[in-house]
Length: 74
Ligand SMILES: [Cu+2]
Image (cartoon, rainbow, N blue to C red):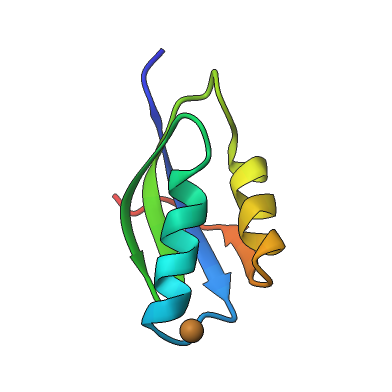
């Protein structure tokens, strides 16, 4: 199955430390490939057989940030 893109808008991120935490947490989710994390958003792809956007939102929520799915650019 082809990977699906995800784009998350994330509130509560402030600095490079936040970026690293989000990047690490997403990368630890099976099936996820992180393309880019910056303050306020994260982009990448995931294998729909392994996870879904809702799980990624929850993963970021467990770090203390508030994430929501954003429309994919392009
Ligand atoms: Cu920070």
